[in-house]
Image 1 (tube, helix red, strand yellow):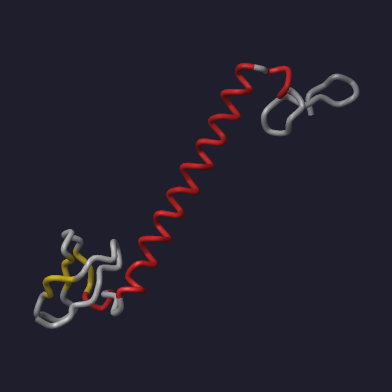
Image 2: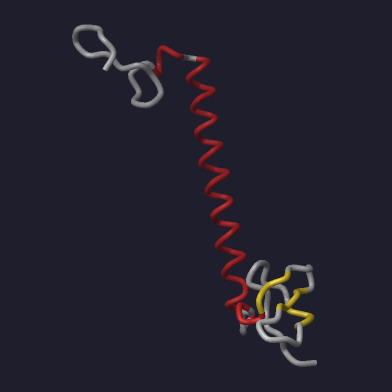
Length: 97
Protein backbone atom coordinates (compact mmCIF):
# COMPACT_ATOMS: atom_id res chain seq x y z
CA UNK A 1 0.00 0.00 0.00
CA UNK A 2 1.28 3.44 -0.92
CA UNK A 3 2.12 5.86 1.89
CA UNK A 4 -0.72 8.40 2.06
CA UNK A 5 0.92 10.61 4.65
CA UNK A 6 -0.71 11.83 7.82
CA UNK A 7 -3.86 13.72 8.72
CA UNK A 8 -3.37 17.49 9.22
CA UNK A 9 -6.20 17.48 11.79
CA UNK A 10 -5.14 14.75 14.21
CA UNK A 11 -1.82 13.37 12.95
CA UNK A 12 -3.19 9.86 12.28
CA UNK A 13 -2.13 7.85 9.26
CA UNK A 14 -4.05 8.33 6.02
CA UNK A 15 -5.90 5.18 4.89
CA UNK A 16 -7.83 6.09 1.74
CA UNK A 17 -7.37 8.46 -1.17
CA UNK A 18 -9.94 9.40 -3.78
CA UNK A 19 -8.68 8.81 -7.31
CA UNK A 20 -9.83 12.04 -8.88
CA UNK A 21 -8.42 15.49 -9.53
CA UNK A 22 -8.19 17.38 -6.22
CA UNK A 23 -9.43 14.30 -4.38
CA UNK A 24 -9.66 13.85 -0.62
CA UNK A 25 -7.86 11.58 1.81
CA UNK A 26 -9.36 10.00 4.91
CA UNK A 27 -7.40 9.12 8.04
CA UNK A 28 -7.84 6.20 10.43
CA UNK A 29 -10.04 8.37 12.68
CA UNK A 30 -12.33 9.36 9.79
CA UNK A 31 -11.20 12.95 9.18
CA UNK A 32 -11.56 13.90 5.52
CA UNK A 33 -9.10 16.42 4.07
CA UNK A 34 -7.71 17.42 0.65
CA UNK A 35 -4.92 15.10 -0.50
CA UNK A 36 -2.68 18.11 -1.05
CA UNK A 37 -2.92 18.90 2.69
CA UNK A 38 -1.64 15.49 3.80
CA UNK A 39 1.50 15.76 5.93
CA UNK A 40 4.45 13.75 4.70
CA UNK A 41 6.32 12.88 7.91
CA UNK A 42 5.16 11.66 11.29
CA UNK A 43 7.04 14.44 13.11
CA UNK A 44 5.27 17.13 11.08
CA UNK A 45 1.92 15.44 11.62
CA UNK A 46 2.19 15.82 15.38
CA UNK A 47 2.71 19.60 15.30
CA UNK A 48 -0.91 20.62 14.53
CA UNK A 49 -2.19 18.32 17.26
CA UNK A 50 0.25 19.65 19.84
CA UNK A 51 -0.50 23.25 18.81
CA UNK A 52 -4.26 22.72 19.16
CA UNK A 53 -3.92 21.02 22.54
CA UNK A 54 -1.70 23.83 23.83
CA UNK A 55 -4.15 26.47 22.58
CA UNK A 56 -7.03 24.60 24.27
CA UNK A 57 -5.06 24.30 27.50
CA UNK A 58 -4.18 27.99 27.46
CA UNK A 59 -7.81 28.96 26.77
CA UNK A 60 -9.14 26.68 29.53
CA UNK A 61 -6.50 27.89 31.99
CA UNK A 62 -7.17 31.55 31.18
CA UNK A 63 -10.92 31.08 31.53
CA UNK A 64 -10.40 29.23 34.81
CA UNK A 65 -8.22 31.99 36.23
CA UNK A 66 -10.73 34.67 35.25
CA UNK A 67 -13.62 32.70 36.74
CA UNK A 68 -11.70 32.19 39.97
CA UNK A 69 -10.93 35.91 40.20
CA UNK A 70 -14.58 36.77 39.61
CA UNK A 71 -15.63 34.27 42.30
CA UNK A 72 -13.19 35.84 44.77
CA UNK A 73 -14.47 39.30 43.88
CA UNK A 74 -18.04 38.23 44.70
CA UNK A 75 -16.97 36.78 48.03
CA UNK A 76 -14.75 39.69 49.14
CA UNK A 77 -15.77 42.81 47.18
CA UNK A 78 -13.86 45.24 49.46
CA UNK A 79 -10.51 43.70 48.50
CA UNK A 80 -11.32 44.18 44.82
CA UNK A 81 -12.90 47.63 44.72
CA UNK A 82 -9.78 49.41 43.38
CA UNK A 83 -8.45 46.66 41.12
CA UNK A 84 -8.68 47.82 37.48
CA UNK A 85 -11.33 45.86 35.63
CA UNK A 86 -12.66 44.15 38.75
CA UNK A 87 -13.90 46.98 40.90
CA UNK A 88 -15.29 50.46 40.52
CA UNK A 89 -12.47 52.99 40.71
CA UNK A 90 -13.11 56.49 42.01
CA UNK A 91 -11.12 59.67 41.68
CA UNK A 92 -10.26 62.04 44.57
CA UNK A 93 -13.76 63.56 44.49
CA UNK A 94 -15.37 60.17 45.03
CA UNK A 95 -16.79 60.07 41.50
CA UNK A 96 -16.38 57.02 39.31
CA UNK A 97 -13.75 57.28 36.61
